[in-house]
Length: 351
Image 1 (cartoon, one colour):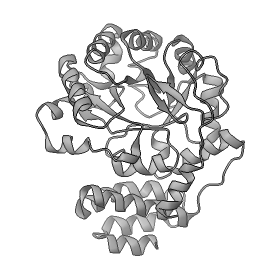
Image 2 (cartoon, helix red, strand yellow):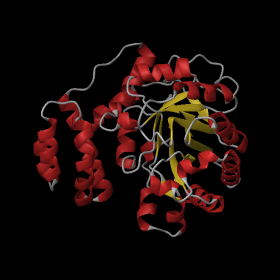
Image 3 (cartoon, rainbow, N blue to C red):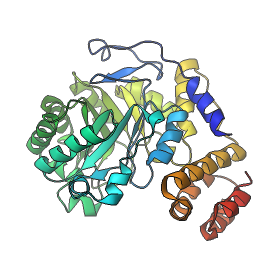
């Protein structure tokens, strides 16, 4: 499946209606291809690519966009990295023209620093939306009073969002988890974000303590969806199939679905979801050959973005996701892990 084929799949998803702020909440959504609004930014369908560190750079975002993702979110970037003109951080802010609408996710611990970084992003990038990370569970982030650490304090959530919102003309959104140790503050945290001026809220259905264990708490996600009356709610966590996506919209009450780990190695899932909600037909999974063409396309885009040496190194970690569930995957993973050039990987993928 060549890049042109990816683009043709994306072009087949047509928008049907534009839901206004007054009507989106009360509309019964049966088609994820219907647009919705985040502030004044029109998202062409109900699927969102989640921000994932080391994954959602422009190489992968453009593939997800071509396969139907309505909104793509950049891997999180540090406010301090922007403040100190860190070369790696600034390089991460690269956006390709075909990515729009696109969002840049920020993380940090200080509201003034976050506000300055958000203002820099607005003035120096082509992003449509700025997102604040309030859900990252990893120790190195929460130890610095960032990410999921904020879930303990709804008042701080309000203060940070209100401050960052005050310096932006483009929409500000938030991604968080259901809570720290439990979900007792989930609704309060969500309402704090809404009242402070967030234009949309995405929530992963696990607490920080759960990390990625157990299952997404759909009951809590439903409660949050019901509580938010002014902004779109985007459900995240355990969305692996078209049926999962449908459940989040129709039963949980979400306005859109955000897909993370399930899209790694299978960005075609966006097209499957969009097609299912437009036609009711469940498309078969891609053949091994088509998966390898997408994997190869991903590698070539990484090379264009970062150079062959770095791209090959990063692809070694990404390849297992494309090989997941295929016969002989372990042997091929091992061979890719030893490869040092595009030519070697071309031969292994048989593209």
